[in-house]
Image 1: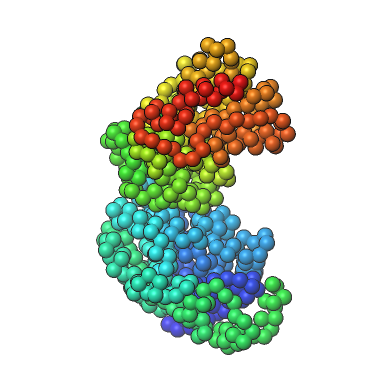
Image 2: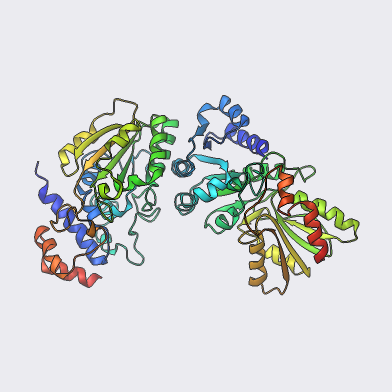
Length: 279
Length: 303
């Protein structure tokens, strides 16, 4: 199935939200658009927008909190809050912070953004669910750059030892961090051997191919190992000047750059004008 | 203290299946006894305090009541941001029990001392901070911590702390205990160092001086009103803690004096730098001028 129109629309909405807030980690959100869509709209996560605290829900933790706009966009798409709320992003009185913030936002399970925390939190939930013989699953999305945080490996070591097969670790492998590529900063060409060395069941998919992501996430984990899904992505995916370029980690387009966003995401002059009024 | 903690925890584990003991390879023989009876309720996270703290927050998010236990220095210093972001900021029902308070890891030296932990943790929003003075007070604090649905830091010693109370105690979070009455000065004290103070008090009494001793076991939230009304009655005010004089109980008392506009001089007794020396707890207290003789000398010279 061709999802290109749909994902373009999601990226457009994310961009317009960021643009009206005059701030955001756009590139980090763009690399996980397809993953977030699969989690919330392709039958992977069980959730209940009418009752976000539903005890039967699966848990999703966005450990790479910079990608918050991709999460918020999905939460609004599936009904946790109105789409209008997105335009309040990162503004006074908003329920939507630059980083996910608990308990402000319906559907956000914990505060993240300081890297290297979310996976331990997810591991605690998964362990507690196991103790209670509950069937709910826990999904945690990390950045590949985030894996430089040592606490990630404390959590993985423990999850493996405790046989937390109810934990699914997703890694956004966009291979770029704030200052440069992971290879340039930390000599990491692929994070795969690291997770394998810690005993995880590692899968690798194209993180922009919705069908592949869905197939991988819906596949039963027949082992008692922690399932790790490496999502090969492009940081800033969807706008050519932003793709794979570290300088777009925390940045909005200047006047001359804006035309790339407008033409590649089908954004009109009128939509830009409305955004500017909201800033 | 450790034995008292384990006995209190054992009772809680027995009566409430939500209670979980979270260790970071920090267990003792007592943990093994609990684990023998409740193998699923004692979790060893290995030597990884950050994961231990935040995983406990995750467990609390789904209804568990985790008691996170290891050396206080490792929790307060190494895991400070994890305690802040994942436990306190989100108001998760995690009980953080830091053992080896003050200089009580006396043979191992300053890497194991917890002598600035109150300074770090007393200002943390949502966190109740309790420094029990004796085994009985520790048991009461563990039970009180269990009763409230919010995070608590309990600062406890090791194994040699003395009991200071006869009979039953009436413990309440935020309610200071008057340990002794006197007229010449008031001393606010927190933690097991109160036993050194009681010895110093005896010597003061022998030289004809009496002091009032108030045990401030709850450092946060501090009962400022009660402290202020005590201070008003005395000209000479002291604080005593097995902690740096900056940022701990003494600083809290100084805040009260300033906030209530009380024109009193405060003498803060405690550490002025990292703890020094090795040996028994008593020997290390002496090396750092926090033994009963040193406390007596200081009080006697100033009263």
